[in-house]
Length: 83
Image (cartoon, rainbow, N blue to C red; front, side):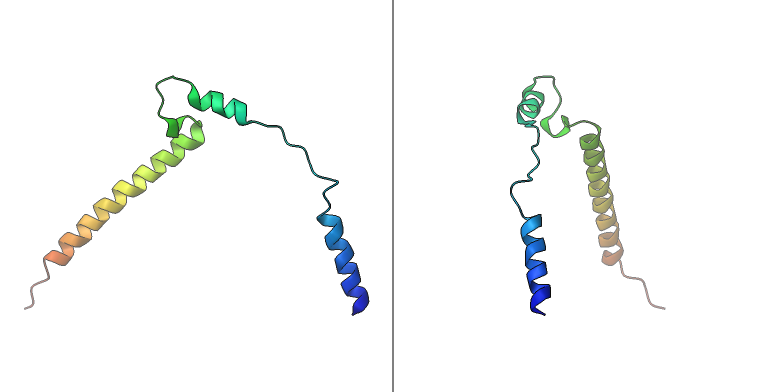
């Protein structure tokens, strides 16, 4: 039991070690330049195709959900006649 706890402790120390950190390239200046460029594109679409797809999907879901809500409200407003 004690041996397994010591082994687990060694593994945890190895994986959390700060000596083997990866260095990432700083892309902030590139992104700042992209988003501050005055090209007539709204800021929420300047990220490229992924932003455009997310925007369109959001708009489709919003309009579709609104239409469905209105439909359900109309159905609930006029109950079926009995008889």
